[in-house]
Length: 130
View (cartoon, rainbow, N blue to C red):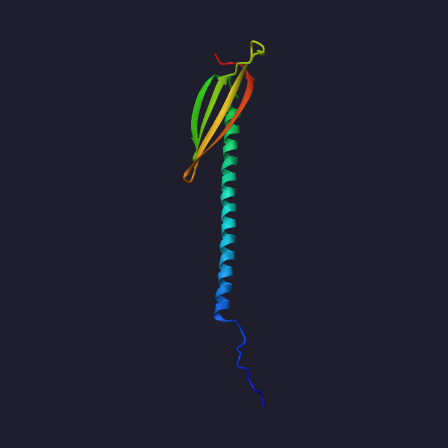
């Protein structure tokens, strides 16, 4: 004749609740990591768009005609841009037919509640528009 043990085999309710709490914390931490990764990707994408827009505006400045000091503004989707062209005073002046210009592009956009800004500037030797 066999005698059965009174001890039950398996997990107690407290052990199961403790395991579920650990799994919940691990999933919460993993979700936070993925969220931060997505935010970082969106920010990098916005900066890439701003850089491409700034480089395009600078490349177009004086491309078809001579440069003229001044400022232009516009919008590209949710990005606002400003391009300024100014004479650059150089102590060692270039030949009289050419002049050195400073071209600056400024890009602004909203990233949720935050306002972001990106500036790019360069110097270009060109004929001055009359």
